[in-house]
Amino acid sequence: MSSFLWSLGGFFIVLTPIILVHELGHFIAARLSNIRIEEFGLGFPPRALKLAERNGTLYSLNWIPLGGFVRPAGEDDPSVPGGLAAASKRARLFVLSAGAGANFLMALVVFWIAFMIGTPIMAASIGDVNPGSPAQMAGLQTGDVILEVEGTEVVGDESQAIAEILSQNAGQAVEMVVERNGEVVTLEVVPRQPGEYNAAVEGPIGVGLLYVPTGDRVTFGPVESAVNSAQSVWRIVSLTVQVPSMLISGEISASEARPVSVVGISQIAGQAAEVSVSSQNLFPVLNMVAFISVALGFTNLLPIPALDGGRILFVLIEAVRGRRIEPEREGLVHVVGMIFLLSLMVLMIVQDIVNPIF
Image 1 (tube, one colour):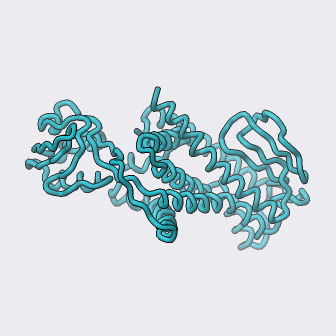
Image 2 (spheres, rainbow, N blue to C red):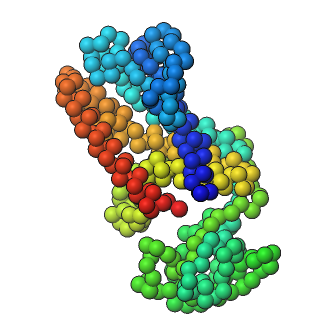
Image 3 (cartoon, rainbow, N blue to C red):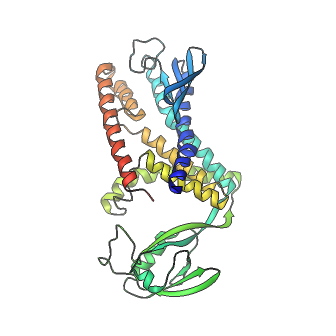
C-alpha cells in the first residue's frame, strides 16, 4: 500500500508538471506564430468547467489530472484559416517541436537547481538476502552498509563496481567490510560461478542493493551547475540513442532496456520522491523530474505517426517533394499510429503492474 501511495504521489508530482510544460511549449509557439488555439485545457477531458475564454481560446479545467492539452484550430485541415495545418512549414515545424523543446528547457533548469542544492552522498546497503545464497552463508544481513569489497572502498552508487569485483573473483573468497548497527564487521563471501545462478533474477552473491543517503552532500556553484546540467541532458539523449547497439552487443540486457508506461514512470518517480523525503534533500526527485522530462521530449521527437516527430516528418517530406501529402492520407497514418501506440501502452501498463520496476 505504501509503494502504491508513493507511486500515486510521484504521478502527480512528476508527470503532471512535465506534461503541462510540454503542452505550454506548443501553446506559446502557436501564439507566437499567430496560429489560433481553440482550447487549452488543464488536465484531460472530460471537461469539469470552463475557466475563461480569451482571444478565441477556451481555457478549461478537466477531470483527469494529467498535465494538460492544446487543441489548435485546423490541426489536420489546411482549409481552416489561421489553423495549424494552414500555417507555413516553418511555423508548423516550430509549433510541433516546441513541446519537446520546452521539456529540454525544463530539464536544464531543473538539473541546474538540483546541482545547486547538492547531490546527496549515498551508501550501498543490503536490501534483502536470498535464502541459501552465498551472502546468507557468509552472514550478510539486511541493513548492512557496504564499506569495502576486496580492499576497494565503496562510495556512492557503485553497484557496477561491486558487480565487477564479485564477477572477477567468482569461486574465490572475497572480503567484504560492512557497517552493522554502528559496528564494522568483516566477512568473507564466495561469489558463484556463471551458470550457478539465474543472472536475470539475482547477482553472484544473491543480495538486493539499496542506496541510502548518508546525510552529506556535494554542492556546485551556478556556473558549474549549468555545465553539469547541460552534460546531464546530453548524456541522457546520447545513452538513449545508444540503447539499440548496446542491446545488440550485449552490454545491457533486454530487461534493463525495457520500455515503461505511465505506471512504471510513476513507480520510479514515487521512489525518487520517497528518497527525497527520507533524506530531506530535493535532489533525487528533481533529478528524476529532469530525467523524465528529457525522455518525454526525446520520445516525442521520434518519427512515429501520431507523435510530434511523426508530424514533423510529414512536414519535412512536404519540404523535400515540394507539395503536401493529402491530408486524408496523413490523417489515416496518424490514426493507425495512435491505435498502435495505445495498444503498446496497454501492454506496457500490464507489464509494469505484473512485473513492477522495483
